[in-house]
Image (tube, rainbow, N blue to C red; front, side):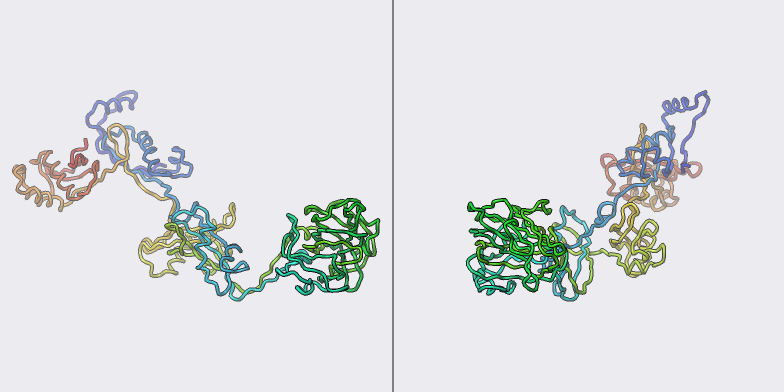
Length: 612
């Protein structure tokens, strides 16, 4: 149902033809006095549909100014010049400033790299760190293309006690011979390796071996073998079942008749997975493996490898079956190859807890580096390290605003905490149930009361941006926000769609947006005009005292005199009126009784003239 409130000011048509509307239009064209009407009209849902406004509102005032004139031309077809309609409609004005698109607020959770700016080696600030010393740099690097006025909720963690790190990895050993810049006897520069046989001449060298993609490549120094007789080992936690792998970067400068030089050990002298090398008879290398003894001739592969070339040797020993395999790689392989270079079956059941390097008679000379032990192929090829951190901490949030090219702490922003949600009720259907708002618990149902209790002394027009957790069935958990303002003593949330009005007037041809101001004269206005005109000889024919005393013009006043008097009044009432400003003034005229008349004025060339 359309809601129309209107008044017909002039109506003098007689319907006498078979087609009444034709007669109406003919009469309008012929008369110099058009029908003048006034109405107040509020658009309905059906009207928005007719205007193809699916969201039930105008997206801008310009759209309303463009779309409503033809709409009113159809609704009021017989009204003419100086008619007016005050249109009431819904207008989309957008989100409150600073809360982002769709009223969502952005959040930023610090990363481990962000915490590292403070010297932290964990995902959190240490107790003695001041996070505010780092937030501006963190946001400048971490937030791309920020907009002026944009708000970010910074989420961070700060330990209340010094955290303790526990490092675990999927490998058992990753030894890179990283023992400083001074060469020497290996067992003298580190306790990672222990002598179990021979002299004391296993040599640590400060250069390293490299292979792209291998995680223990090019780190620290290396071990030189072949110039002595010392055998050394490195201990790890015992492994009693399954397959265990060893790997090493190996670059050999000479090989002899053949013997093993890398192997697994248990707590005694049961050696398994023994990797060996020997001359192929033409100055190249054959690599082999012995499952539980030195590799025999049948345990060597057939591929001839070059001296002075770095290879990645990967050996395995299955503790349950006693089977060992050897792979010789020129680059790391993501998966274990289907065919090994050499294979051997020995005695099963020997657990392992050491990796040994041997300098035996007939063994090779060269360099060993990047020794690793693991229980899977992946762990040989990928450095997968897990770090567990223990220690008490608190999760915190702080708002920052981007303004003038800088990030700074936000003023006038409040984040609804879990405790705040709980205070709004924790039962089913209340915000504290899940500590968020949603479609069944809209923020405007709770925040006005909450803010009233939180800020009992807030002043009229005080503003506060409120950020809160919101759950949407279609989009999940979100961070949203809105600006709340104290209006008539109550906190009111910003509405993206508002009810507003716009005046339209008929200019004789069509409906146009109209700035007409309607004003009815009061007693003081008549007194003012009388005072201003006193002494003006052009008004000797009228009684100015009567104008002031009775509050009306009389029949002695000419139209031009009334026009001039009303112009003087408008200069007093609206001295800053812009060019083109329109007024409809309602005044009283005594002529055989009091008559209420209207005059249509417009400011043109700085003067008030009739708006004809």
